[in-house]
Image (cartoon, rainbow, N blue to C red; front, side, top):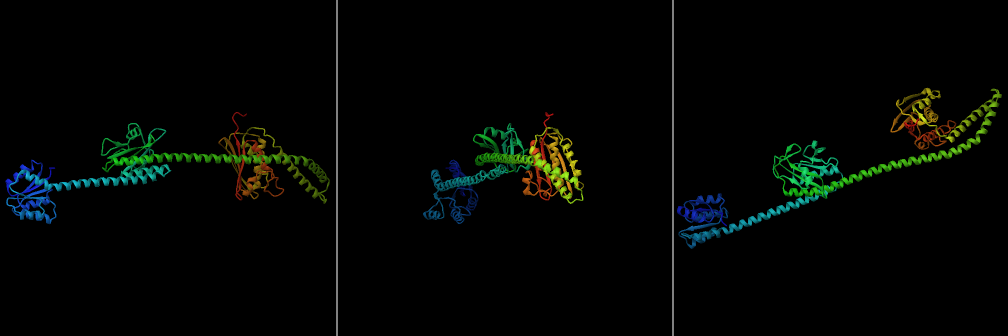
Length: 560
């Protein structure tokens, strides 16, 4: 194998010319020359030569001296010595100093070529060994890097696939893509099912203004081509003709499709804007593997979000339905309670109404005939008062028992409430109560019985005044919302204890002192509002007043 560079050192021009022009050059060797031993040593130490051929006797330094200098400096350069007058002793000395061969002048051309070939054989073997060793090191480095890349990819993919939060997952994928490639910037675009465009969902290095809402059309774009073909696209060097849609040029870029099965759901993009580092096939391999894991994780996260939304909606509907069933059950219990007590009340009232009337009549007759100074006048007056109270209770029982069907018509609830409130100035503590009214002037009419509704609000107002014996504030308001007219009566009185709230509409239940009420007012009101297709609710906290809310359906326009 020719092509090596040979240093020729000889002080004779004819010897130099013969060796270089007639032997080395035709054989394909390169050569450099020197005319004395000192210059030859300099070139042997400074020039990249593979072999030195030098005369034994030369000016300044002999061939032996050059050999000794090379050996002293531990320079492993093969040397062939030439001489006209050789001896066995000289040859032995030359070989001891490291000479590869010893040639007597004059010599044959082939003799010199054979000597050169023998001297370079070790150099060539060493060079081949170094080449193979370097190749092996390179392969080992590649294998080590591939193992390292696979380990990194395994750890990254394990981290990515474990995430269920979609937003966190998308950002983690970008971070992983930048990590495995060393890229400066990255983004992830998913296909918007509504428009078919690619919507940027996560980014790093592009600036926050690009990270949300940035859209890329599928037509006539690199990303769109990747979506259509399902194949990666990348550049390995700066290409001024490729302008990314974020209005700047990049030196290198890579687009990787995100695929679930055969369907492309988005594109993973990395690029270098300032760095001239190109993307390699190894980078594309890693990004493609990451994209496979990422697509599966995105699909799983989307499914998880769908299931989570479905579960939340299901829980909401179950809660709503449970509340509806509980309310219906409470209404049913209340209705059954009212019906059974109503039957009892009707029977009791019917049986005691006539006896009470007789007793009250005789008492009133006797009271008129008895002088006030008589000792019998006070007991008779007491009998009359209590008889009248019994009559009132019986009347309430009959009213509660009848629960006659309302005579429906279009009624302005503002007028009904106002008519009931006009009776309140005659209440014993009316001067101590401040009344605040907030009626909706455009309130739509309700479908109801005006007299029965007035009875409901009269009961509520009387309760409010009685809850504020030392005065307070009474707030009356009305408004319409979602097909209902809503009226509110709120006081700042003593409030209702929490343990009484669920019994407040029960017949005969009262928190008033004995003789102050029958406990039928709210029960009657509850039944009347229920017959009107509405509801009555109470909100209260002991010591903080009470608020009663009446809801009635708006009268249909077709009802006259």
